[in-house]
Length: 340
Image 1 (tube, one colour):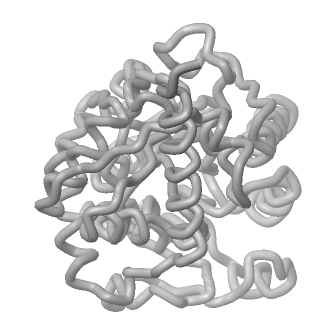
Image 2: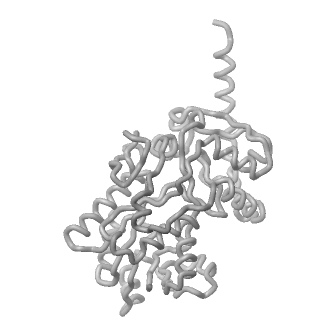
């Protein structure tokens, strides 16, 4: 199979690229080349800016693909660009949406592809919904062979997935745990969530590539393991070898405090209990099975990050914000206990 990946070196796409190569696929990566060395010359590099139509047309002249997958589309204009560039060059176009596009609040905790799409809290999710609408229009009106993929919270060895973190990622929360400081967990920590290791995601995705039954379909890809946020943070603390000092703070309070986009990220996503029904994926890819349990995957991630200082991006602004929010919570609790 011959595939073109636009991007191909991110958290999700790196695992897909690796698995596709292991399966003997012929892979072209169209990107700016910043991390292509991950694949040791096994890919064919097309170094250019996807937003430069003329350059892309020139570099893809005479090439045709079984699959084109774009990992970095966020607004309908980017879908329109891809249609213009690839409508006559591929037998299947795979595009990423997001499980955050599902309705908030949910009418049913069990989520499948028929769950309505509606998220008034997060612009990111509304843009993904608009992308899906446009893709389906292209499929229905022009026969563009699309497959929409909906990931949820996917991680790899370079990341510690969390509910509440700052602009520089999760390291500052990990650092707080290592220093014995309390860390913020949204709500009471009992809402349900799903973490998916990127190697498991790749199994589902590559099974959809070249799959004629996936044309015109939207498919979610997640693990079947369901965890509470308390369990997630406990697993991270155990992997670090420290005691978890959790401070539970209302998601609504967090969404209205500080410079961080917790309205979209929490109220529009992680504060909602979700359990994913992957029956459709398993019908399309019968051998799909997620095998990386979260406590195992996070142990690998913690070991990797602790061994790679370049991934330890400190965030003193977020650290100070955590201290301030926790102090406000403790003060409110103390005052609430005082006699009237």
